[in-house]
Length: 378
Image 1 (cartoon, rainbow, N blue to C red):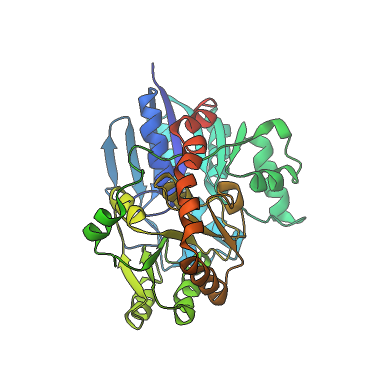
Image 2: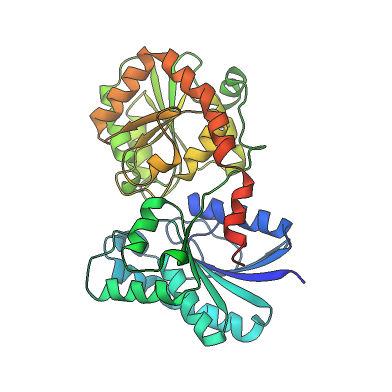
């Protein structure tokens, strides 16, 4: 009989982001291995996109809960306790309702992130189910106090913790969590879909300039992703460089207005994940200019799989997703971004060497077998 897993998560499609795409991949590969998924999530909290209240697919049923927005998710990011209190109630109540009426076949509750993971622990205790927590971020937990004690308790009560980076694992272990309860997993990408293409053909198809260095940004348009610094860098760029921005989020209108004032910037808005390989293939370098502790950076995996080198922030776990054989590290500011791009355009031979190494690098590290590190706990 197929195993059934209840995924509890705040981020999920049609919202756009690395966690959302990862969960799609988890479901796709898990179903191939005879695992059924039930997903309890919110309607997107940071974009106007909307999905069906109940959506059914092969091996998966998704329940999306309406929840007050008012941009609260982003406003509360700097206040972990308040954000926890905002996100907890809806998913917790929905989880109780689901398990009361349809939870007989659920073997495992898998919470995505600290809030959903806490909910999974409580539901597991109430309904006698196994619970797992996946963390996708670096939390910078306080060294003492109520929040520290609460997190310790949650991690101690769950059966296992799956964390995305060694940096994240280290901060969880510092809480006193037993080492044998924490496993590092790695995202993966469909490398038949994300693969190198003919650059000139794809540039014609997506209407990129043929004779300029194209620097691509793909991500949520929020302050912590460094998109403002990227836009500001345009005034320091020398001739022959184009910045292309793909994404959606609260800063979309601001970014679009700023892009209109510069011939060096193209803003394309939201592009479906299925079409992203075209844009990776048409670009010369991807930039991930995060100004916070980036959990891993899934777009890095996609870009490298397409043979596209990466300029990455030196913050967070980006250094675990790539190295200098396939990219460049910078301390993010508008001037440092411009300096990196100006240097690259003057030395394209080095960029080409990194491009040749990018696909082999990704093939070694980011294949779909990485799912085994997760499903062995189901």
